[in-house]
Length: 482
Ligand code: NAP
Image 1 (cartoon, rainbow, N blue to C red):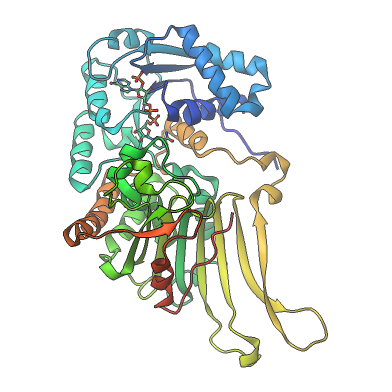
Image 2 (image 1 turned 60 degrees about the vertical axis):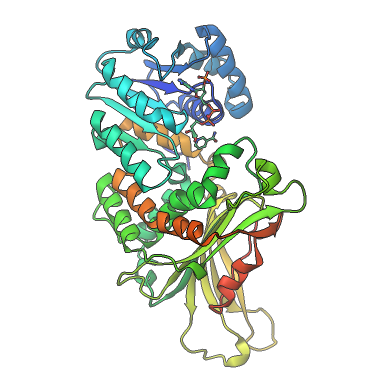
């Protein structure tokens, strides 16, 4: 099955922070892949901006080098590479100064989509929004793309929302959570709302509990200072895991339209109970290699590199069904998966000896994106009615054919959605604030109690207390499998 490419209209895209890690490793390669897929018209401009002084050709060389590393397959087509680079330009510019803006203005095309990507540190989001307006670069067709982190707590998120709102309407602001751009995350909505099979069972009557795991095997190299101020709760739970929880728990929107979807997600966040302190486990990695505290160079750090918690969505659909969420660094494997754990059949006609068997729907976000449904069947052979659980496995890559082996990177989808003007996969201001309103008291509680994270071995599944969190409820985590 060949995926359909829907071309976009001509556009100008300015990337502030174009020499940085995110732009070079993710945004520009994503743009190049979409270019190679034929999604762009001829007439497109990508303008990099940062303080470093580069000429256009030197910047193109830098981009070419990054594309060779991060879009190696597409770079084999040297004509495509050269043609892409022809559309790349650069303007030296300091977000905190008035210089360089006129130069940028002179390069922009009149009367077409004009997107400004803020791929810079968060302290520059406000000044950039202000400068775009004060230098009269904003038009009706202007959109701004704001990277994470969006605030550090509710107050800072509100302040940032207010600053952006002074200069842009909500319909022009694209707050990125790159998890929402992942194919499988979008498939979550397709599976839930495109099939009759699951929705009737998607509630507390049939679902025992839900597990959301975002495990990373890597540490925090290169982001030590930021991470030690943020921790897993702010860096992952408040945004990525919260978004996954919303997509699993939300009511069916009336249509697949940005505000209809985001209204339903917001209702989920607002229905979340505050989390009891004994329903949260924090951890910090140590052993096998440098410990967290050594990595961040702070021997007293009480920042968590792991967090697991039990959350409740207090509404009719989910009353009594817990959501267990966990995320951490330096764990045994890189694995993001959502497990919908159905209840046992109410009565076993096969007797007690047949054991307990419950269906599990696993939605794997990475790696090996796909969906598995664990069903119970009879074990083959003449030895009587013995039951066994087997997976009905749908690997998207296998099911959709070889041309879909390589699902598009989240940034490919998200950047093209910005150009198309589709905000469905971007967070709205009120959603972000509601997520902080839920997160802030948890962090304040740790601070008030002087909470210290539990140590866990690098390369393990996390602190033992996270196992206890489940065990106390007569449940256990599904394995973290690569
Ligand atoms: P980075 O590698 O430190 O790059 C920062 C970029 O901003 C550089 O191009 C830098 O170039 C430019 N810059 C800094 N100060 C500037 C100023 N005053 N005016 C204009 N440009 C300025 O950071 P990054 O990792 O790419 O991250 C960028 C943003 O994306 C951050 O908000 C980060 O939290 C977010 N993010 C990053 C990742 C990732 O994987 N890297 C993932 C998720 C979110 P000059 O120094 O030459 O100005």
